[in-house]
Image (cartoon, rainbow, N blue to C red; front, side, top):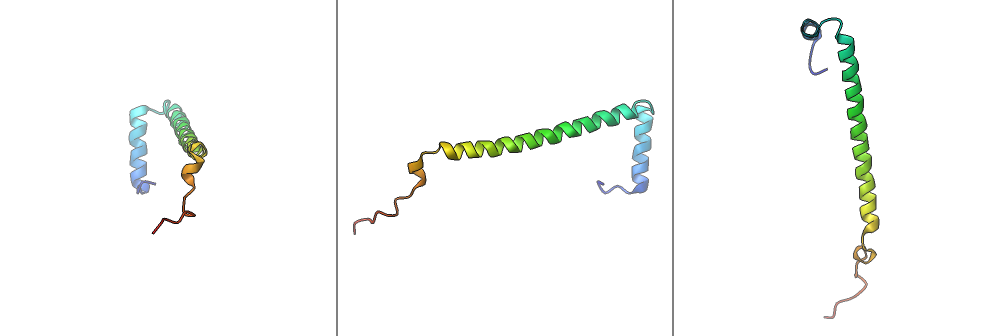
Length: 76
């Protein structure tokens, strides 16, 4: 986890406890979890919208533009 070992993680937790206090930690953890959940949801929605946009763009293209005229032989 971010390259932190046991002692380093313990020091960070003690500093957070000192800064925010014991009563605020559950609320802080809850809001952090909700934020992470909302962020993941936004990322998933963004990727699904991108995929839907790509499908729409390919279906809206001119069908003649996608076919090649390789059947025609140029005059030599």
